[in-house]
Structures are given as structure tokens and as C-alpha cells.
Image 1 (cartoon, rainbow, N blue to C red):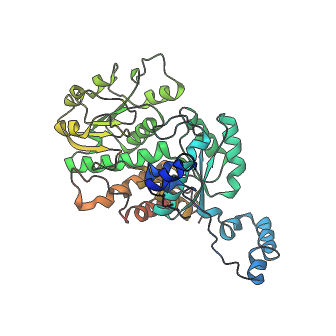
Image 2 (cartoon, rainbow, N blue to C red):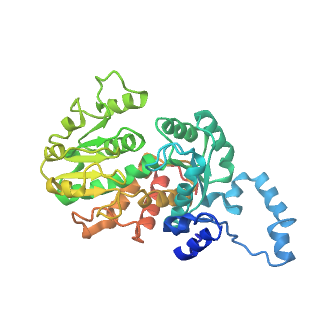
Length: 411
């Protein structure tokens, strides 16, 4: 897949065109992002030549009939003689796009194209963006199930909570290919990797740390589950109404489940009350955390303020009180970026034709990602750069090995 960059006309040329009745100047004359996106960021490229009638007879009729007949007799051959085992469907309904919210399927398509080219660039995995014009859970599930024969995996993207949880669960039950909601699990994998290295830097095991997560949506729930799975000492999650605790009467089923395995300390009240004495803050909600609350955290705390474009705690404030600071932005050190995880996770799963992505595979991905930092570990380097060429191979190998160990690999 290839990106096409169109060189915009100069500002003077656009002014001339407008003055001569050519209409308004194109958007790319004001913003280079529009120039890059003109015509889309992807194209389909053949992997075999069709130069003459012999090539044509092999690539299409009559040669293709032999391959079709073989697959009909032995369905597993589809993995060897089509693109199925190396391509992922990137599926959205456009209801929770980046920081834009519910903008619909068409407006979400630039993000899905972007996701697809990141799959290719960082993991060598082909991906196809599919923006669906439906938001009903049943309709989305049925649509993806019907499309699944063409793909080796499904990456769910930018689907609002709590529907995203049910959609992923039901697709995992009905399909025998990996289904992965990156907003949940990609974020969780990279967060855990950074936290492992922050803990190593401070000489403390995860089991001694108490974390507080701001945000009980897709990412917050997944991070909490993964931290518990990894052995965190305790973790509390706060939504807009305060800390999620068993004594609250307004919890959704997802949050009630969350309360059942988090907040062992029994903290209630606002986010600020949970931060007092906490070792870790993880922000996936937006909003702003008062400096006084950050100051109340334990000495040597870690602040992962991951909201974009405005972190919940600005790094300048966080550095006054925290030993390690991470954000979701590329212009500060320690960027928690999903692109560090999902390309390698899918590459590893596809490599062994895994039937699903297990918790063990996600934990293996986090450990592999953390290990890339190695002896270069420092307060401003607890997670590698997305452009570190060691990342995807390390994650791929770890995920493939974990899939084999857990019995979900088919080769």
C-alpha cells in the first residue's frame, strides 16, 4: 500500500484562480495535512505481474479455477493461496474517533486509512479500512462475521463504549481469527510496558505499587484488567462521578465488573482522594487534574497523562512531583503510542495463524516492548520510539511464541 502526496499550488496561484472565477482555494493551500490526504493515503498494489496472455491465464481464468477447486476441497488452503493470512480488517462505526467523538463513518475514514498504513509500515501487515454505516451492536457483529472469510484478523477501532466491549466479545465467540480492539488492548499493552520499566528504574516491583486510572471507558477498563493480570499491588479507576467502588449504586454492568477486581483499598469519593499517596497516575480521560492532587502522590511517583492534545497533567507540572512522566504526545519524552503494539501483535498472531489473541499474548507483547529499552533505561526513556526498528520484530516473536505456548497457534 502506498501513500500519495500531492504538491499544492502556491498561495499566489490559488489567489489567481480564485480571482479568475476558479472558486475557493483548495484546503491544502492553507494546511499541509490536506495536501497529504488528497486522494487518500492508500492504494491496492498487485503482487504478481499480468504482462501477457500467459500471466492472465494464470492469475485469472482458467488458472484460478484450479486454486478455487483446491480450496473448496481443503478450506485450510485459503491461507496459502490467497491474501487471507496476511491481511487485517480495520473496522469502525465512527462513534469514538480520536478526540473528535461521534463523527460518523465517512469522517472516520482518514483515521482508518492511517491505521492501515501504520500496520504496513511498522508490522509488514496489510490492512483494509472498513467504515460501517451502522451503530447497532447486532448489525455490526453480523456485518463483520459476514466479511470475516476475506481476512486473517479484525482490528476494531474507534467504537464507543460500552458497545465496544460487547462487539469484541461476541466476535471473539463467533470467529476463529484474532479480534482485537486496539483502543482497549493496544493502549493497555504499551502502558504496562512503560510501567514495568518505570518500576525497574525505581527498583520497585509492580506488586508494591498502587495505581489510579482516570477514565473508565475502553482504555481505562483494559488497562485496569491488564495491570491486575500483571500483578499490580492495587489499582483504582475513577469516572466522572468518582472512584469506581462496590458501594456505588449507579454502576453499569461493565463498571460493576471493574469494581469486583479493583480498588482493594475500598477508596471512595473523587479522583483526588484516590491520588493521595498513590504511586502511579494513568490518565485516559481528558480533563485536568489539579496540581494539588499530583502533589499529594507518593514520593517518586509516576505520572502517565495520556490525553491528547492536552494531557490531564502538563509535563511541566508533573515533573515537579514525579520521577517518571509519560504522555500520549510525540513532542514529549515517553510517548505512550499504540503503534508500538498493534502491528507486532497482529504480525505475531498472523504468523502462526492464531485463532485468537489471548491475555498471555498481550502480556508477552508488553514484556517484549519493555525489553527493547534494555540498559538504556532512564527517566525520559522508559518506552522505545515507534521508529525503533527493534520494536515490531520483538513484539512479533513474543506474541507468536505465546500463541504456541497457549495452544491457539495453528502452525
